[in-house]
View 1 (cartoon, helix red, strand yellow):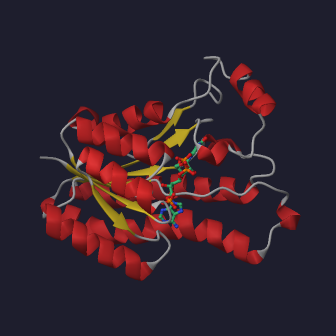
View 2 (tube, rainbow, N blue to C red):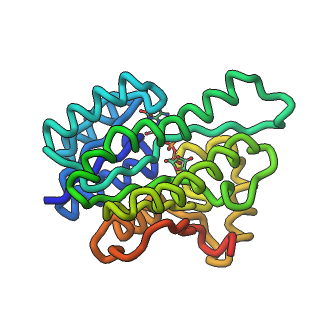
Length: 238
Ligand code: NDP
């Protein structure tokens, strides 16, 4: 049975991935930070293992990895999805807001990769997927720090594909467009309609759209795909 760990699996895109991978017969573990009730309900519903782990914490990540490896014995796929957003002008941002964003997205991906990669290398198989964003590819006004974090994940994914490729570990990046989750709560209905209108496929994305792409990149069907940043954006950015 294939095994996967999804960070930030309690809501949104992570939750859709937990559901889809579970439905497809994978053994799934996922992390959460604050949404404990949702996480435990999802765990009961899907049979996935829910673990509280702050993505930016070295201690939490090490403890979480130990539990996952104890339960599953090995990890086939790591998906670094946990994320937060910040909307506002760069000059209004505090240093701690900047650091928090980088810690969750970039340090989080580093810590999880460092925890699971040695096991993948020793088995000479595995795959890693970083959830970036189309804003990491093109940049978004009023989301400069977020765009920088997401661009960092694309750089990390490409570099790690080269570093881990000779050990038969694939590393890819997904760049979702505008996806209907709690992360969009700062957008007005009018903004969301305008974003859908700007999208060639004329709609916003769903968490399931992203989950299906993640499943494909994690599967044997993608066995010769590594180092790629795949857009799941309805054609918003081409
Ligand atoms: P949501 O806000 O719906 O969910 C975020 C998830 O991340 C939650 O499960 C949350 O857990 C978890 N999380 C946040 N901070 C931490 C942390 N420090 N440690 C562990 N888990 C944490 O966001 P989305 O589902 O929309 O986003 C998922 C990923 O996709 C993010 O990386 C985001 O940047 C990216 N993305 C989203 C897009 C969108 O339009 N929605 C577009 C492009 C990329 P909890 O609730 O338990 O705290």
